[in-house]
Image (cartoon, rainbow, N blue to C red; front, side, top):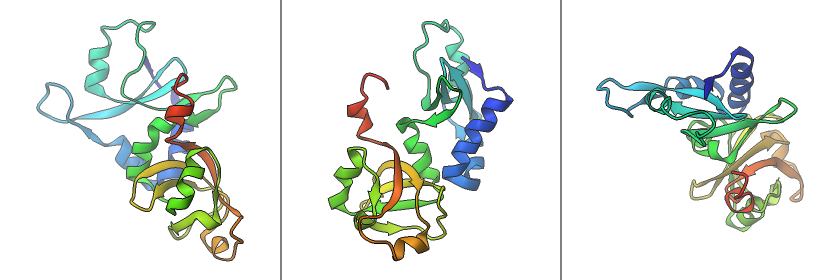
Length: 187
């Protein structure tokens, strides 16, 4: 487990910024109450076997007793690097994204299952949407009872969604909580 280098940090922060905007500062400066110290520590990003983890510094110090090849996971896995070198957020980062999301979309109960099976969000299944969404923005998808279901990329702006036909795609699917069952072996 090692800290991210400068280019890796830039790539991870750009991807997170797409979803949380200026709330990225909250994620980086989030105080950690883990460990025996009386003063709160902080969280950091670490790379282990092409996966990026969001973990408290106190836990990183304790994990140094475990060899790299025996260490399976530590903290919250927020994403992974592909063989081609691009970075993808994983569904495990949903709690961090949902707490700090800049753009949100709420689904009607009838379209929740469609999204959880890996389909895009259609205009007909849209319950609510935050203002000022631009195509290409990162969007966190919620149920109408504010349960985070997943995240994706906005295909249309908020203004375009109002005049879109019911079968038009609003959010392109990237990850959903149904992946815990579908991709159980890979997570």
